[in-house]
Amino acid sequence: MSTTTDTPTSSAQGTYKIAVIGAGGKMGMRVSNNLVKTGHQVAYVENSPAGQQRTIDAGRELTDAATAVADADIVVLAVPDLALQSVTAELVPQLRSGAIVLTLDPAAAYAGLLTTREDVVQAVAHPCHPSIFLQRQTPEEWADTFGGIAAPQDAIAAVESDDPAHRAIVEATVRAIYAPVIDVHWVTVKQLAQLEPTLVETVACMIGALLNEALHETVNTMGVPEAAARSILYGHTQVALANGLRGDNPFSDACLIAMDYGRESIIKDDWKKIFRDDELDKNLSRMLHLDHIER
Image (tube, rainbow, N blue to C red; front, side, top):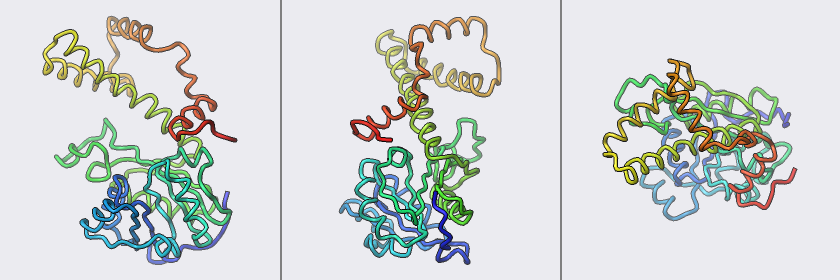
């Protein structure tokens, strides 16, 4: 873990120098749209012509990468996982001592694909997205299911440094790029990889897609009117999550029997193996198009 004591260049004013790499991409635009509302000094970097045009159309000035990262306190890599290896190989050698490299997904960091330096801090952060139990107050909050616009959300972060100043920079940046943020939860890089993808993509997102497949079967194979199927599925999904995750109400005895039938018919007995380290490596290898992950 980095123990460098170099201080950020602009912390005295409560703001930092932030470089956004991939500022015109899907996530880069989300990040940049929030950073522009802050007092931070932000440099926007984008290589693709389409991304450059989006950045310019948003009223932001483009900066070349070398200039942007030269004195940055933190460099936000808003680029696809598959590009992180080459991007960090190019940029990390150019960073000042004590700078922070922030990736927005843990896969490449956990897999050891990033170029690192002892005097450069590695950090990872990922949004939790607005909770299904969030008490939304406005139409804008209801419309913001992804987060980062109007609906408050939590964020998860990891920073490989014992220096409180580094954590402060990461938290300030995380709260800015994912705003509005309620809490920032601190974990290790490995724990963040266990949360994303294992818990939320391998399990939760898969179940979400399975619900849609079940809806399709109900409507197109069984012939149930779509409006009726959607209404009962949407309502019961809320009940299922509220009861299953929070224990709001007990499931009925008949429902428990049907749930057992569903588990026997759909779920493999050894499904919990996905939480093992070797299975996490296998999952991330597939996501990153690798033969294997070396330790």
